[in-house]
Image (tube, rainbow, N blue to C red; front, side, top):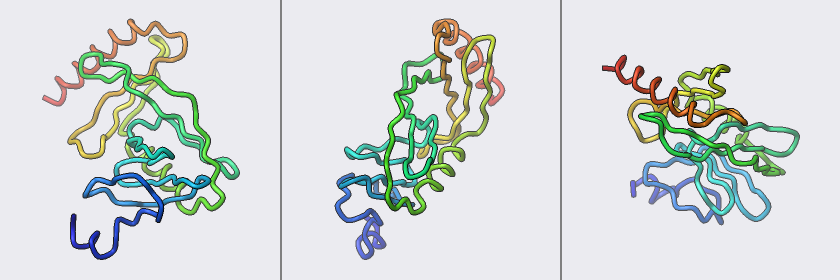
Length: 167
């Protein structure tokens, strides 16, 4: 643990039960009932507590007094691409949101390097930066009702072409 943390603490709110990485910095936090929503340099800690990496948040929207978050889970690979599946949205009511909505928006959009929807295959192809890793990862999110095996075939081909271009 660094000197700064020993002297000033982690920046996490009192009562937050998550365990931060030694180089993980708290950027904003807001109470969700008796628990916390904590935005850090690594991701968004949701009540539980459990951290969701910025690269695994498909969508986050602020509406009125709540932050709605759509988390994605890795549903296998297609060559060097990662296939994602969205979970149902979770809604976090925040009485005093502070900077949380702004930080979440900045971090989620900041992790995206490129995105393109392929209507022929029925999938989003998104290149994202993953905190703590060099380079970017190609993520593929099939549309509802898409032929997932066909999406995987195309994703593997696209990932191979990207790898070849990177040399």
